[in-house]
Length: 287
Image (tube, rainbow, N blue to C red):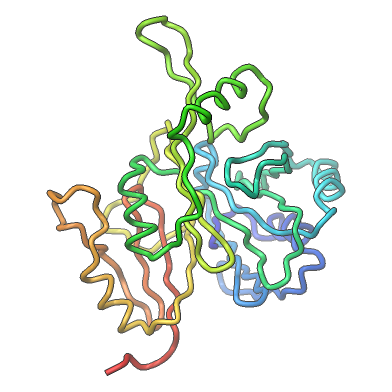
């Protein structure tokens, strides 16, 4: 995952605490800091005006160690960082945990599980069209369906418990619209899809907020989801050039994924403007 931060030094101070004991290593480039742990990496990219989408709930969840969440959250709170305690709707996230806001506004979720070879537990991505997002992340990128949320009566009842203050759900998982019939706020669950990619997953949820999108011709930027594939860049390029990722057939671009290639990496974006990097295997394409 690549995140934008306003100051690399202050960002590293927080992430050093979060990653303490994970066994990874920092690398420094001209404009970024990269933390590598096993096959996963987190990149902090310097930006004068960090783009976080935090108001819509974009976040990244790190495994920080079983039993370490409370002490770490208390330490970060004493250091002046905002800490909230919420839960989400994935089957593995039914218990409350801590969400910390870094100095640039990025939301970092602390997951009480040992990192082993997995540092990034999941990434939360808000979208404006859940149907297109489902096709993009499941069919286009080949994610494994971990589950849905927001379509059943039980889920509606849970949103009412949230509105009553009885269920501490993360605010981006619920919404309240004004009923034209009663003229009162009506709580509603956010439609969500959980797409598994190896040992981690992407939580995609329908936001009620307008997402400011970068120009359509920009295919390489941050924040950026980084995925790995055993396919070569030639194989992945051929696949992306032919796959359809639109839930509607009549689209201006035919439903394909525009992308840029840089060596063994491919860069593109979903239809809500979220950047994705596909890190391909450095090998020759199969004949």
